[in-house]
Length: 300
Image (cartoon, rainbow, N blue to C red; front, side, top):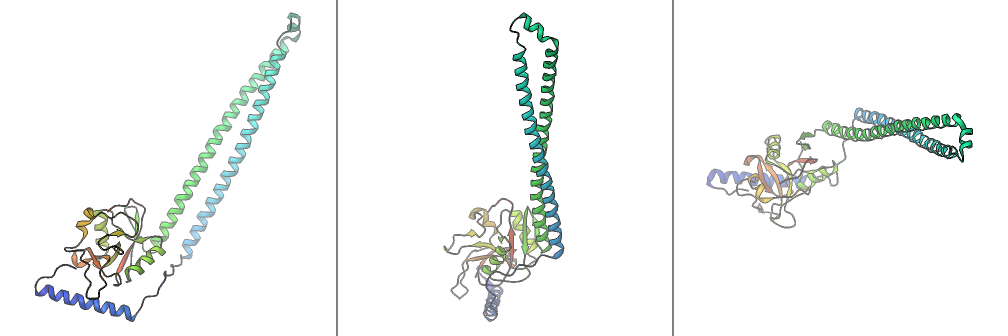
């Protein structure tokens, strides 16, 4: 907490102490249930939509796979035919080689005409083989597009579910602002059960977004120095850079004030009293929290 000066500030400190004491008493009187909270069941309408999307994508993929198999078989068949015709032409060319003048005259124009027709057939088969090869490439491209579309549809379905549960999109990431209060550890467990973590902060813009959406209430974020005092880390693995983060701390923070309990302050929350800047606090205090389902680059 910041250094206090003046009677008004002393009075604020006394009231803060009393509020903390009352909060700690409330925690003792009403212990929070342990373990991960149950996930909110997905509404039937969303499940039905997801099943329809999955069924359509599976049918499309099956049709494309069958088409690709047919094209592949045609390609192999045409290639075999071409090889057989080329071998026949070669044999015919050899057979037409004259042993002597009288032999060449005997074979006559009929054999030459047969050779021309065979060579024309070879060219036709080559053209057909080229068409089959092009069709094979088109089918492969369609399969790739289908797979990419399935990935996008799956992602969109996941995002729709999260939106329906109160998550908000910002900067390519999804955020959940709780309406209830928990300790820092309970809040992190809640986030993990939703495939996320207590939020990290990657930029000044993200800090301003979080501060604005906090609506004047204390919210836990995912910064802690448990284990080694003063060695701060983001619980989601984002690198913590002290110089870049200095402007996000409230004045005289962090101070690891033990509040007379000997517990210290190892967890960080957005503190509306201090212009929504960061303040270290006892991890057992009940605050609202912010989860972050990250997809953008990590930062501060």
